[in-house]
Image (tube, rainbow, N blue to C red; front, side):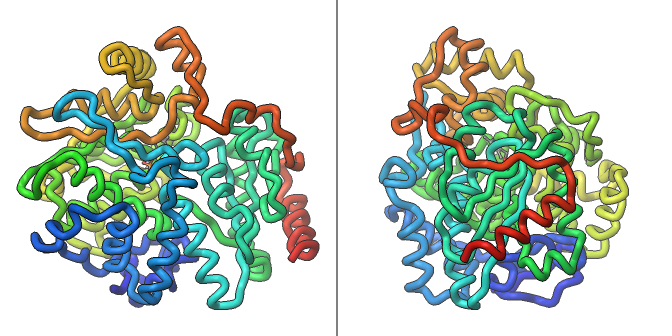
Length: 472
Ligand SMILES: *Cc1c(COP(=O)(O)O)cnc(C)c1O
C-alpha cells in the first residue's frame, strides 16, 4: 500500500513515511493509491471478531511496513477495557428496533477523538523509537482535540506536547481535564487572548522552517491519515453489531465538523462495507450541508463562524473534505489542485453545473443541519422516550439522522461525546445535571499544571526551546 497526495505532487510513500507528517509537500492530503477491497468471504470471517482483531485486519490492509506482530501489539495495548471502559470498546446501544447509538466516547477524554488519538500515540512512540528521534507536538485547542492529544501522548518517550489554549475561555471541565495532567512531557500554555491568537502562533512557529526543523515540531491535527484509518474500524464494528448477516445494509448518522469522522465512513464504504447512506449532520455552521445540497463549497471566515452549543462542530472549513472531492473527481489531481487554489484564496467553488454533483449520490451522502433549539429538543425527547442521555453533538446527529431514517434500513447514530461534558445544555434540556462517569467526580478540584503567556510568538518559541533543552 502506497500513499499519494490529493494534488498529485508527492511520490508514492509508505504508511510509516506519512505517519508523522501532516500535509503533503504540495499542500494536499495523503490518500491511499487505491482502497483495499473486502471480499464477501472476508466480511463473513470478520463478523465474529472482537474489536482488537478487527482493528488488526483492517489496519493491516493499510499498513504494510510495520511487522504484523508489532502492529498487533500496538493495537492490543491501545484498545483495552481499562482505557475504553468496556470490552466492546465501541458498544452499540439499541433505542428501538432499527435505531441505534454507537458509543465512541468512552475513552479518557469522553469524546470520540480518543479512539484514533490513542492509537496515534502508540504508533508515534513506536516509529520514533525505531528511527531514534524525538517529536515536539505543537497545537492550539479550544477543547476536545487538545485534551485528546495530551491523554494520548502523556508519558510517551521521545514526545513532548505543547498545547496552547485561550486563558479562561474553555469550560471548567475542559480546562481541568487538560491542566490536571502532571506528566513531565505535557506543557499546557494558557495564552492571554482568544483561540485565533493561539492558532496564529502555531502557524507562525510552523512557518519558521529553521525553528521547526531544529526543534522537530509536528502536529496531530485531524488531517493525519492514521487517524482516519483508526476510525474506519468502528464503522465495521457498528455494522456487525446492528445486523445479523452481510446481505443487510445500514445507514450511519455522523455529527460532522472537519469531515474526519465521516471520511472514515466513506473509506469503509469504498472498501465494500454495505452502507446505504452516510448522513452528514452539521450544526449552525452548515458549510458541508450547503455543499451536499447545492454543490457549492464556501468556507466561512472566522467572523462568520458561530459559537454554538455543539462547539466541536464549529468549523469554518472542513480540513478533510479534500479527500472526498479527490474521489468524487475520480482522483483528478489537477482538478483538486485548481479547486483548492480557490479555497486557499478564501474563495468558494461550485460543482452544481458539473457531472460531479450528480455523482455525489453514488457515494451515499445525504445531509442536514441542526440548531440550538432542535438540539435541546432532541436531548429531551431521547431522554423521555428511551431514558438515554446524549450530548449536544450526538443530538445533532440524531436529529438529522432520524429525518433521513428509512424503514427496513437500520440507522446507527455515532455518539461523539458524553453528556457530562456539556452540563449547561443538559440542564436546559432536562432540568437536571448529567451524572459524571466514575473517576471524573472531582476533576475540577485536582491540582493544575500550566503556564500563562502573552500572545507573543517569540515568547512561545523561547519557552519551547527552554523545555527542549531542560528535559530528556
Ligand atoms: C471533533 C468532534 C466532532 C466532529 O468530528 P469531525 O471529524 O471533525 O467531523 C463531533 N463531535 C465531537 C464531540 C467532536 O469532538
